[in-house]
Image 1 (cartoon, rainbow, N blue to C red):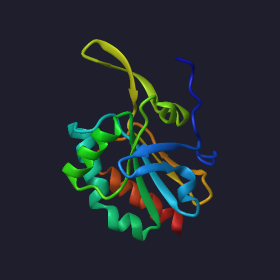
Image 2 (cartoon, one colour):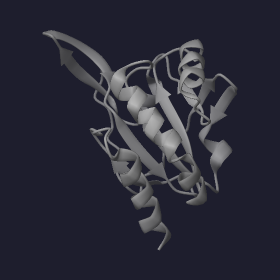
Image 3 (tube, rainbow, N blue to C red):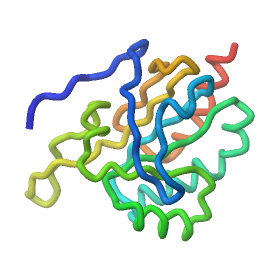
Image 4 (cartoon, rainbow, N blue to C red):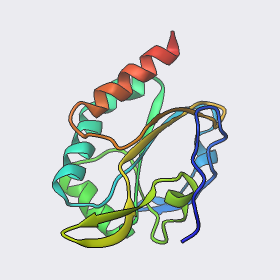
Length: 159
């Protein structure tokens, strides 16, 4: 696998068009709105479930801050649909089956588990501003307290 480009604050966010249970979602659909774009490893796992639930719990406050939430993983649209229904999620989960968007955002990383090495998504969140530029990056996210940290960053940028 070729080396990935790292994104920095101020960079233009890479464009995407990804499938969701409700149809294709594009970055350009949200120009003029802040986007909380979070990449997560896998549907139906404990950490990813806690993270999705935290964003759902914060959904009203995120919306009041002028942001929409989009979750991205390599799982299928049908997996996303089951995961969203099970958790009662009101924001889109986007399917990136070939990890092309994860690679463009620099979050597809070499991981290891139980002595096995594989490529997977490193839990990372990007705040993308109204002009489509990266405003904030949260790398190697620890789930507990993360949604609150994102809300604080959105509040700070509004000042």
